[in-house]
Length: 443
Image 1 (cartoon, rainbow, N blue to C red):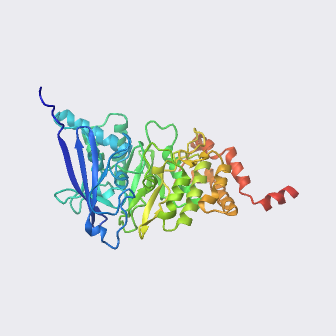
Image 2 (cartoon, rainbow, N blue to C red):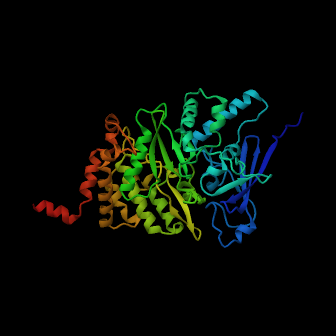
Image 3 (spheres, one colour):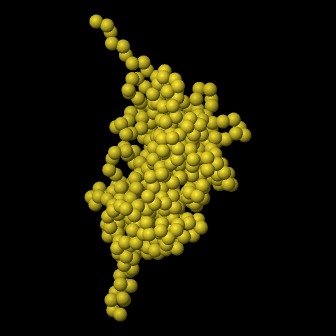
């Protein structure tokens, strides 16, 4: 009887560095044997003893030696959480897979894509956060020579829009795919987007309309971000730029300083070490923030304000990957600016992330008020937050027609159900103090 052949194993080692200062934080090892994939990570001894040390990923112990990560399910990453946060989003994976399929048509001997291929397919310049990957030749992955660039300038939005639209319609050329490769982002889902360099040299995202859109989703997102700012929420700066008559959202990256230095970043899912299929709650997140955030009370109150805002603008895509944290100091983090805020006028106001394990999703202002104390807010403070948010959301029609958003009248009506509803009026009433309500009753 012939012996059964064991599948050949592939092993790739990459050095992991931090920021432009190039602190060597450890070594990543990727292993694939047949259909089995896993990764290992080992902190460098120099990083473990560095006074600036912080936990690169919360699922890594501060210890010498290799630590192993296997995906919990097919939907989860084989990489430790903070590294998985830098993987391309669904749109980026789609571009990478299409490009690879075209290459395999020319070269049938080319093997299938691995999870390492996806991780390594993001340009070094635009990878989210501060983690950087370097190969055995000491070259940062998908980087170019000094003086050149891979991230396109704002002036190239027309080219990017055309290439992205061709991919959506399955009409892309090899040139389209080559142009889009590496420009993927980690912030977002399946919608077409691209990393860009804004007019002043700052890193940004260009988010494009989809051929499947039934309303101006890009204008809706910029509107929501501007309303959130009016409501006292720290947000990513955003504006609409018209390209070929189409509204493109240009959204500044918040994981870079004014000098474009890199800031370490992790998602809310990473902070909780949550698998992608898990049902998690905001109260779980705020409990984890208590020991992980430098200014816990401020961040907890800000999180509750965002929850109220999401509910009142019908942003129901509030999963934990749409919440982020930036490194602050002393192995502690801070809540990152809000991003991916999208009103959904055609959906019920029910949050994707639960409010608490007992109450389930957010479905009313009353359930939010009942949990306000968990987020470091007194009853009076919670009512003031409600008043701030109600005031901002009530101005949505005025803000929507401003040049930075640019909605037309018919677009306003398409979005109206997301902003004008009985729940907003209920929040307005709930924001009044007991004394005010009693005074009104005595008139």
